Length: 90
Image 1 (cartoon, helix red, strand yellow):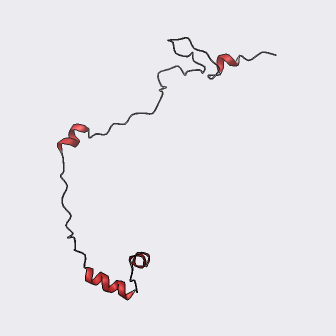
Image 2 (cartoon, rainbow, N blue to C red):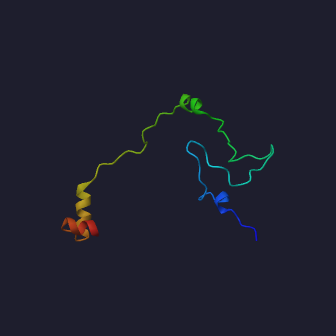
Image 3 (spheres, rainbow, N blue to C red):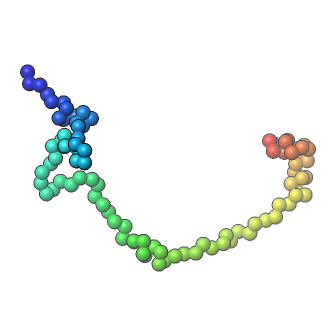
């Protein structure tokens, strides 16, 4: 029975020399048609084009309304909320 050298094929057991990369434990495909990693797709709009077309923010077209405390108090009395604790939970 042939003994399998796991210390040469197991990446966790493989020792490396100081200052050198670990030896390869897998077969690397040979040829021009094989690439490692994901293909890089570049955005046609680069950083220079993005910063040259700067759009400033616009204020909201909705007007903020002031709180009507008289109406708020009347509705709270309608719900019989006479303390702050009751008005929060109702």
